Length: 135
Ligand code: NI
Image (cartoon, rainbow, N blue to C red):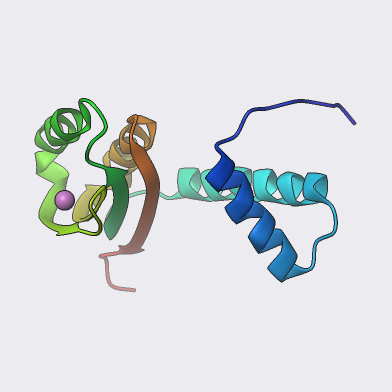
């Protein structure tokens, strides 16, 4: 095993510790290993999807973060071909939830969600898709 040290926001670490406690973990390192594994599996799973999909992208972000509104809007314009609708909810004084209905080649839906994830000020992105073709 290799040792690493890292910096985390206090709240994230507290929340993570809460989850570990609820799940009965007694080792934070084990919790982090499992979380990383889960992150990798989800990414790989997302990458094997192909073809036409319809889905929902849920994004939570801090609208006070400098540039986020402009960057997010620019991305939505760039990917307008794959966006069927957007719902914006002002969650708290700071946070907004945006639910984006996406449709099209999953390659571009994935690209959009990856680009949103990389925006500074975005706290959470969740992509759920299903197939549009009949089985
Ligand atoms: Ni808002």
